[in-house]
Picture 1: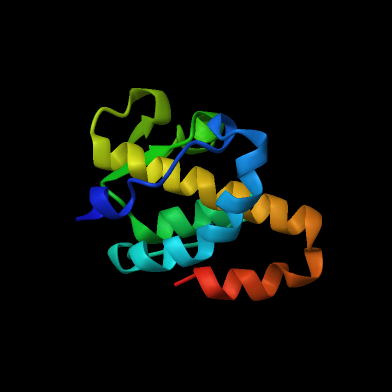
Picture 2 (picture 1 turned 90 degrees about the vertical axis):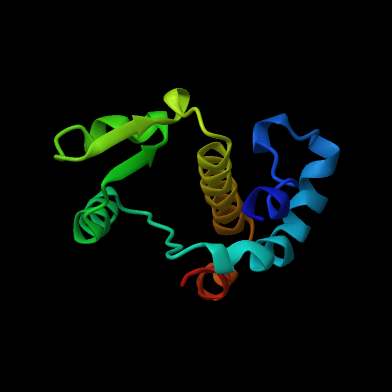
Length: 124
C-alpha cells in the first residue's frame, strides 16, 4: 500500500524546473494521503534538536541522508546511509524526507510568515 501511495514521489533535483511549482503545490494534499502510514513527522532547523529527538526514540535502525551521516556516527545504533539503502520502501521513506525538507526550505525562503502554519499541517 505504502509503495502504491508514494509512487508519485520524485527526487526534487530531477524534476524539470517548469514542473517544480506544480509539484510543490500538490505536495500537501498528496502527503496527507500517506501521513497515516507514518508514526512521526518532524522538521528540524537545528541539529541538536534532531539528535535529541532521535535519542529519545531509541530506534534500532536509522536511515540517514549522506550529509547528516557524521552527526549520528557516535550513536550506538545501526546507521544506514542513504547511498547504502537497498529496500524500495526505505528508499521511498528517504525520498519523502528529502521532499519534505525541500518543501519547507522553499516555504521558508518564499513565504517565511506562513512557515509555522504550514508546519502545523504536516507534523504529527
